[in-house]
Amino acid sequence: MSFHRYVALGDSFTEGVGDPDPARPNGVRGWADRVAEVLAAQTEDFGYANLAIRGRKLRQVTTEQVAPAIALEPDLISLYAGGNDVLRPKVDIDGLIAIYDAGIARSDGFHETFLERTTETGRRINFGTLGCAILWAPFYAAGDVVARATGAPLDGYSKPYVSAVAYGSAFYGFAAVLLGIACAERLRFAGVIAGVMVWVGTPLLFYMYVAPPFSHACSAFAVALFVTVWLRVRERWTPPGLFALGVTAALMAMVREQDAFFVVGPAVDFLIAPVRRTTIPAALAGIAGGVLAYAPQALAYLRLNGHLGPHASVEHKMSWSAPHLIQVLVSPEHGYFLWTPLAAIAIAGLVVMASHADRRRIALCMLLMVAFQVYIGGSVESWTVAGGFGQRRFVALSVLLIIGLAAAFSALTARAAPSAATVRRAVIAVAVVAVYWNIALSAEFAIGLMDRQRLQPARNAYDAFVTIPREAPSLAYRYLFDRQSFYAPHRSR
Image (cartoon, rainbow, N blue to C red; front, side, top):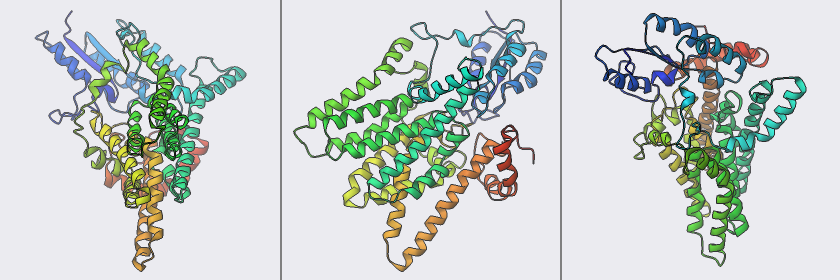
């Protein structure tokens, strides 16, 4: 069967965001463009229009794009929308279904192809892992109790369930901060100030309170728990300790697959530790703990995909030569250090920590863990994470940032030279500004004051230091008492 006119509708996913192509007028070449190219090769009089616009929600797509699409008289329309709705802090799932049913699903000739995609085992494609479900389960159970008590729909998506996930992410994000402080204190650093600054000065804040359905707060917790266990276990490397380390490593990998690479730090630390009589049994215990704890995820992979590991389509997202290694850190529009300058200070603190002999091995292992996360971030084709707040894949580094920032402040305090006081004040001032920068960007992003696809440093700085302070009372009131208006598009421009 051949098609002569194809129109694509939707949001950034259909527009092609994350698939850059400088040769294109809009700078991207997404899946719809590729489908059109294949269809065009099958007929001579083929026409194609991509009406998708980044950031659009389901109602906007149905009201703004459907009518123009029909006017083009296509014989094929694709629509992918709703992602920007469900990622909002408040979402009415029943309302979305009603919009979908009334405006799309009941249209003449509609065919719901997405739900027909299956794996090699004949099951629906599932890109999620089990870790967040495990961590959210107690909160979800409480949400179910509330739903039954209040008469809310028992569909798993009504307000009590969504609230349960939101509270769960807030809890685990804060637990990650507390564990990070404890780790810093264990290394004989004053960790409270560093912990508070990383809490409010990095994207962790955003994914705890503004976009909690993402996995990042849970990721920060799982990695922080893993690092906490490592710092305790490494004193003796006992079999029970390694078993516990293996279990936490499995949890970490089940929350976000890329977090498995954090294992490299403790692994190197263990391998270069003095050989003891219990070294081999301890190593076997660690492997056993990891295998046993990871078994549910392994069974899910086998059942869903027919093999160990995620669906094959995930492999196409990676370029293992890490072509974006530098960009992911310092790109003016998407770089980690531009979004989160506090991270640069914290990583510098780990470097300073490595200069002290008594903590050198730990610091180098932590820097290796950071390096692997940068490598993974630079290997993903969607390295810009356009549409998300900040370089969100690095939220998992929160515990290491707390330790590094505490180490930096400790090094500054230890210096007694007269010039040290000036340097100390300057670094603290920069850190405070970096914390405010994150808070301001969170507000700009939440209320639609900034381009959610990229940073515009000059404009963002103006809004951070002029617009946001000017409107702070109104924003605070709306966030606390009129949340729906807080997230409405900003209209001052």
